[in-house]
Length: 317
Ligand SMILES: O=C(O)CCC(=O)C(=O)O
Ligand SMILES: [Fe+2]
Image (cartoon, rainbow, N blue to C red; front, top):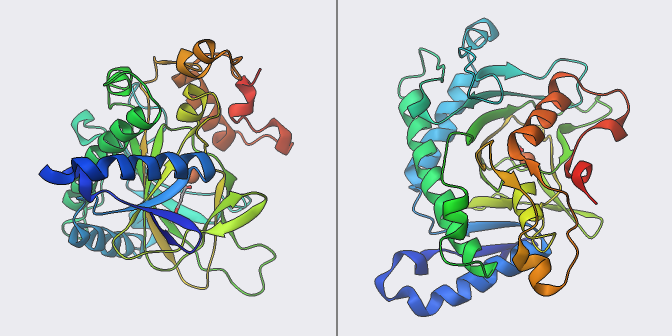
């Protein structure tokens, strides 16, 4: 396992080669270690074409460079099945996070709104969505193995992709006279797995042993971070990493793909991490959609007291 700065880098090539069987154990061990120590790692040789990644970042920059009135027109119809409004959004001025974004769901749901231009944006976003879905499935299979779960357990448990979503985001440059350069405040993701594609500006950081470690852009790599759902299923054996984005003097672009359980899935520590090994569960169970709704409420109705922001500690026993 190599490292980029202080973050582990896992080579996924063995999972795609006929004769890679021997190396799979090594790569799985690297994933397990990364999930236990950081909850955050990069992957290379992931089969998301590097050309697609570059094109996606370029076209997203062209989209966000459009006039605000144009971007504001990109609003998706609110569908009952989706947890939050799709389309373009921008953090209100009083919010610390300084970024704007486009939210897209599985294109098959027919709920997405796209701008008229730049040419090829929609196709590229959808191609990314599909490639990230494939990569999410592979990472999930690897986790299934490293968590010691029965073959195919996570695949069956998490067999419906309609709660996944992707955000295409642009962070505003930090100006010297500002009192804070936060782009996205510290948080953990609610997902099972999050995949992040970032440009080369930098600013993404992970909290490790009380220190912020930069997730430095590494050409052609994709960042994987473990979310709350896996942390709960594994009864804290695998970490949902605390991370944030600090703004730099330039605009920063990223794609975050959230590989989520279906909303009707019951999330609770699995017997492999509790009863079978004589450990007490650290969380009570909950329906994924209830947690997701509470998380969306944090954004739509931000509580005045920071301690009232709902995170996974809400379900801690
Ligand atoms: O923009 C990024 O690199 C990360 C964004 C993020 O943490 C999120 O969307 O949950
Ligand atoms: Fe995040």
